Image 1 (cartoon, rainbow, N blue to C red):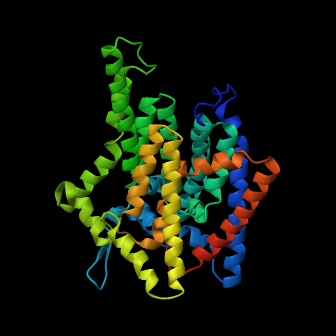
Image 2: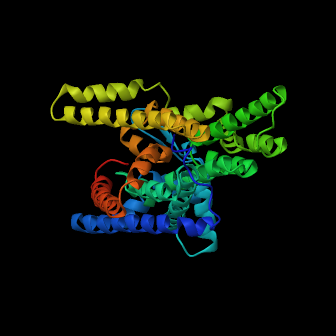
Image 3: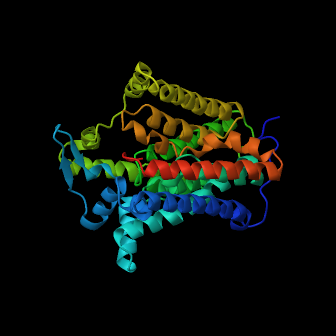
Length: 393
C-alpha cells in the first residue's frame, strides 16, 4: 500500500482553519529567523532590514517598480546586466502597493514577500494535505520554513511570490479547477523564468486527462471524473500566456525577436548547458583542501535531491507534482548561472520535501516538535551568516 492509497477523504472543515497550525508554525519559524538576523546584523554593524530589502536582486526589482524597464549596467569584461532579466509581477505589485500606501518601493517589496510567503505556506499545506493528509501538510510547511536558505522567503525577492502561485496552481490541478490552475500558472510565468515548470505541469496533466478520456471512449468504459473538456482546454491555453507574453515582449523590446530574452540572460552569464558548468564548479573544489569538503558536500546535496525526487516517483506522487519538481530541478541544477544562488533557486521545489514530511509526521508530536525547533535555530543562524556574507544569495 502506498501513501496515496491510505490517504483520508478530504475533510469538510474550511481549508484556512485546517491550515492554521501550519501557518502559525511557519510564522513562528520565520520570526525566529528574523530575530536572529537582526541580532547578528547589529553585532556586525549592518542593517538587517537593508539586507532584506535593499541589496542584490531586491534593488533591481525596486528599480523596475520605480523607473520601469530599460536600465542596464555594462561591466568592464563586456557583460551587460539588463533589468529586462527580471520578470514583472513583483515590481508591478511593489508599484501598486507604493501607489496606494505610504510605503516606499523597498517597503512594498518586503510586504509583498511577507504575505506571499504566508500564501506559499498555505499552498504547500493544501497540496501536501491533499496527497498525504493534514499532519504531513503541517510538517511539509515547517520543513520548507526551516530550509537553510529559508531567510530568502522573507526577502524582497520573487521566490515566495512564485512558490505561492505555483503551489496554489498545483492544488487547483489536484482538485480539478483547471481554469484557476491555468490563470495561476500564467501569473507564475510573469514572476520567474521557472514559471515554465508550472506550465509544464498544467499541460502534461491536461494531455493525460484527454488521453484517459479517449481511452475510456475506446474501451466503452465509464469516463473519469474530469471537468468539462472546455475548462481543461481553457486552463491549458491560459497557462503559458504569462511567460510567453513577457519573453515575446522582451524580444520585441530588444529588437532580437523571440530569442531576445536569451540574449538578455546571456548578458548575466545565465544559460542552460545541461549541468556542465556546475559539474566543473564542483570538480574545481577538489583541487585543494579544505575546499574539497565543500565539493563533497555539494555532491551529497545533489544526490539527496535526486533521491528525494526518485522517492516521490516510487511513492506515486501525482504526475502534476513530479513534472513540476522535475523541471524546477533541471533548471536549477543544469543552468550555468551564479552557483551561489542555486540553493535559493530550489526553494520552489517544495514537493521534494513530501517524503521527509511523511517521515516527520510519523514521529510523536514531541519528537517532531523538537526536531523542527532544532532545525529552525540552525536555519536562523545559517541565514544570518549567509546574508551578512559578501556575495548575493
